[in-house]
Length: 593
View 1 (tube, rainbow, N blue to C red):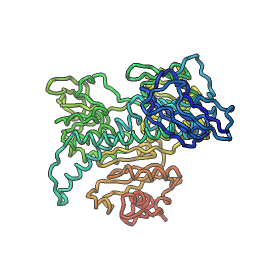
View 2 (cartoon, rainbow, N blue to C red; view 1 turned 135 degrees about the vertical axis):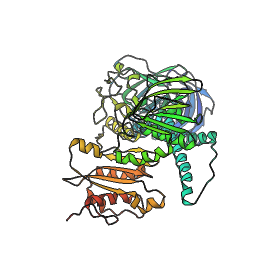
View 3 (cartoon, helix red, strand yellow; view 1 turned 90 degrees about the vertical axis):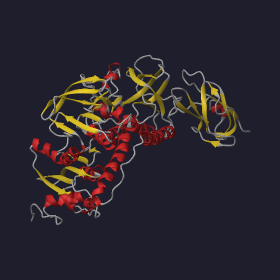
């Protein structure tokens, strides 16, 4: 005779009653052990409740909107004949060692390898805690969940995705797309097609940007749910080597115990002490992306990637832009021959560009912000409607109470890690901006995978040959490997092949002739050492060069690779032919036997 059991809600921590937002079973369903029964949502987290046993659902005893607590009956189950009633409990709880990709509901108990060092009461317990849900953080969380670990992901923003998706990479690229279209339509007049000056609707423009963000962050939320990764929102700080306290926006605190942790807490914009940052007319990159208005005159402090990208957005929308940069060139990390075409283009578009100069003081007035300068060609002072401060980012290592966990942080806030992304505390890992330069999302994602795999016992390490950089300006600039300036400074013998896009049929057909593709090869081995590209879609083109360097390709490998014609991608092959002396599309600079 079949045995019927009543399934009851397990211990859900400090929550007295939690609302049911989704019921995942129906009477008559035949389910396996670990099948999710329902989804609960508190003000801090969403959790799925799994079945401890296999069988056929006889009745569902709750409905959506009900609030349930520990021990409340939720369903009745006719047990499968292979599962004797005496072998199972009627309280919903997981097996101690769940299978991969099925074990991450927050109510489950896990077998923790490194026991908590302090006797601290916890609201949640997990195999792996990930602090920060940016690209590195959610990648680490998802990879660990796929490998069978119970994961809790902590995020300070309302939506996961971190700075990159919410107030960084993604919204800026949406606005830069609009900017490039505006610039292109204005340039088409020279080719016989003249457009009327567009009308800018800031509300719709913000809606477009925010829609892109919502689509991506919503997709991530679904991926987390499907992997049963628990998400807690709030500011996380360590309270011991195995505990983290999460403070929500309403002031409530939750304590999470963990066996392993991955710190992916990112960075924040650098503030300059002599600037009134409390004045709403002084913006950082996050503020600039809000597009509150389009100032008549805007000063951008910092000629790096972030400053130049936001300057392009505001200039295309109608602002008169002035840029001040302490170095003698824009984007100091790239070779000057790569940044020169961009500098030439923006000198025509912007009101002023002051290189080798700095801001020494800013004072706020009703009619503007008075700025004092020092440096070649810079005026003593000038007045602007808004200022964007884009002088870099600082890691958040000093904000996490890492001393409570024993993790070493340097004076700047960076955490030292090895190739396995381990800190000085063996069960705590760190990835992304917080472990050092370059502060790039695509670096963090690969570090996140390494951290998750190492924790799960896989042989993994972060050992890239190169990490590409891209400025999504107009024209774009991308580079990977060693720059020409680095090779000279290190005394490395190299050969260079540079192909001007003025000889590219595809580039000319786009009405663009300012681009260059430069490839640098070892004199001794002819292996590719570095590549720089400037021109439309440079950021898309650099990936081939990165792959070539990772695989140890030499100039013959690249020049003999048949690229489609006419394309911008073939300029890398032409650059290799320039280095070889085998180019036929131009006169070769030298000939090889």
